[in-house]
Length: 386
Image 1: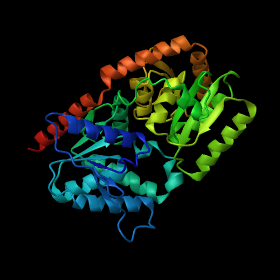
Image 2: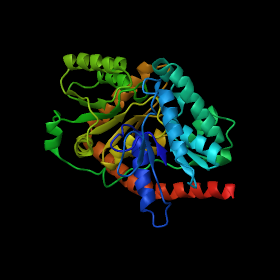
Image 3: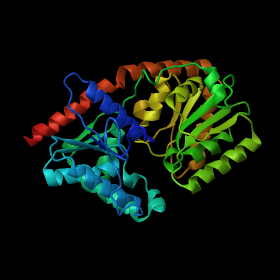
Image 4: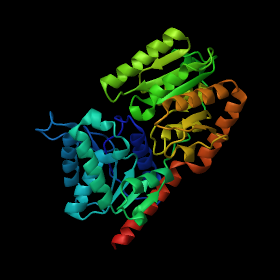
């Protein structure tokens, strides 16, 4: 398995996915013998690969390709390579070309669906887009993390043979993410646990829709609390945009708390558990693993109806969905505010939705089942090659 992110350097949903999938694969009674190759320094449970000498000051996309070359050189004796995100896709592609190794790609997101990256990365975005396209079209198998993502992959890469495309949903560790009522921990984070609050957890990036949520918050009732657990900004400019919006909001109303950090799980789980409603205002989301984590903690979810989110949030049962139209941000923000206010005003209904979400996670999104389905894809790929 090849990945950019591996503990302790996990900052996004793809990294969470890889960490838990690898553990679940290793726990299967008849599962594969699994080695993990990742970006970065030495790890006790993976082989780390640093940026090669001479590329330390190069464009980040070129650095990633340099790491991928190093990884591919170490994959001569393996039976199959499974890569995650464009950062690692090239390692699988190169291993397939040089060693003839079958290559499986998991589609966590698609570069053409994130055009704002061109403004941030310039030529690096053109290179990442080329890597992704080339790897997907050459892969022996592509795993989409939702049916919505499968549709996206075929829309963006219509040349891809649909027979090589498989849907295996993301999972969630329902033991690590479970209801943990702990008002003391919530209070230690600067949040009033006795006040109903809506919670956002995620990176500061245009994809996650943080600015839409902050605009929606202007329309919330005066007694509504809003907590943003948001860090790891894509750019200093995006971080400043959020900082300015938060400062403006805090000047107009109380109960607005910004935790600018990616919290450890022992703090994050009580914070999610204590929320009346969890909010996911993403404008693009192949699945939205964070919504599964919130549901596993027994918290109702208000989310945008984009990508694979409707496969996770059962509208009216485990949460509420808000239509998103990129041409009408005001309507989206008004919808977010209305749905959030609706659940904040009715805690018993929100609690019932949270309980239903927990039940659904246990029934449909456990990692052992995800691992077993992933092995099924491996077997299909290897059978096709034989």
